[in-house]
Image 1 (tube, rainbow over the protein chains, first blue to last red):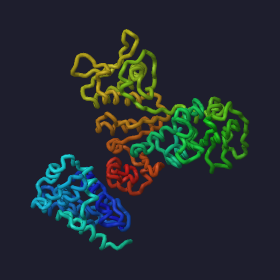
Image 2: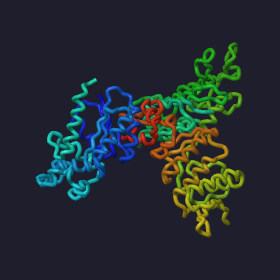
Image 3: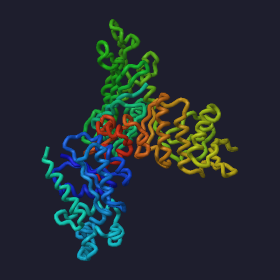
Image 4: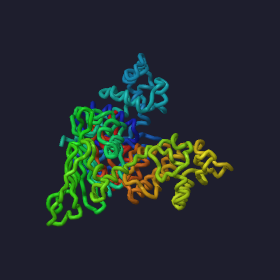
Length: 186
Length: 392
């Protein structure tokens, strides 16, 4: 099988490329970044239509923005149906990618060589990073040199996949494992 | 006369590369260092080998050992398939090596493609400075005709036979091919070179670096006013404020390029005009050339230009090709690529130091995605030209 991930932007692609080879070793995957939400939404039916490989599964990864989560998911599922692939998986993941990183301050500490940073992980706000209003700003406060792309490149390969800190990351990883288990190798 | 295929062996990053079904407008994308400029350099090398000789063509590039693919002994092989003006497919192939710093033409052949009646005729067949040419080319295709060969010797084994024989009108196809290669033109426009005034004189074509821009502008203004008018119209719509451009002789016998902005009384001389304005004007002067180059190459035309203008610039490249030239463009701009047709796009991917060339329209998935409404530049940005992105 092969999983094609349709993503909103490039930092998520870099993150998944640091995570997936460890999460689902040996499974073929491709990450396609887009230029934001609207570009992604326009692209979904086209990509689903045009891709004709057997044994392919699509995963649509969308940030949770201010809009109603259920409505958004429904809209994306509609787009998948329009593309002729109702079996696609739609994941509304987190408010901002940085929430995943803040949930794993041990990885952040290692990635940036900031000794002692991980002791903050006991603090209440970092035990539930999904509830943070502005994860990017929070991370930037701790790591002033943090940049979205190079930061993801440093942190993602170090993320703990067995006991992820962020609940949304845990749910996402489980969903991917599930897809692989339910699709025996072809 | 158009090039339809190019095969390169052992030339720098091209150990064995093929550019297939070359369209009139051929657009190349690929990471830095993947070989886009080297592909252009293959034509420049041929031109140097033709107008000078093979030894000098190597010397300009640091010697044979710098040109031949790493870990390869050669020979370097360049094969150009082209449609001659009579509509037939012809193949020119060249094998070259080096002996103690001197270039050697191991083999040089010009022939029509196999598969037509009988054996293909070798109009040229030379090796190390001697060989033969066919003198009754007009009889080709007549089932009873026999080729008439004429033995020839060249002055030196590093001289191309197309140079020696191409000057004679009786070798029609040879001289046609020679003219094509001789007229290979790379536009490597340098704004700093184009800004100063040029000494008075006559220039019909924009030079490679563009330093004769003011002379060509004056030439078009004087001898092709309708073309110059068209260029001005396009300048006005693309560069806000521009009313007119002229080339004015100065007292010391130079030609000064001036841009008139509608908001100001006095025109700006080129030195004070923005890079993008000069560049757009230079491209229009290049592309509206009343006698186009048969082979034109342009590297990264997008630099300094506003993205919205690139779509129309692309159309102008295509129009130039449709008027008779063949145009090769390298680009890093998704906006430019969005205006290009899939069958005009090739991408270069480098693996272990060796470059492969892929034709975008040979990729079924890309074709279907474009059919679904995706634009080529967008697909390229999304990483769907597999192997084109740098491996970071």
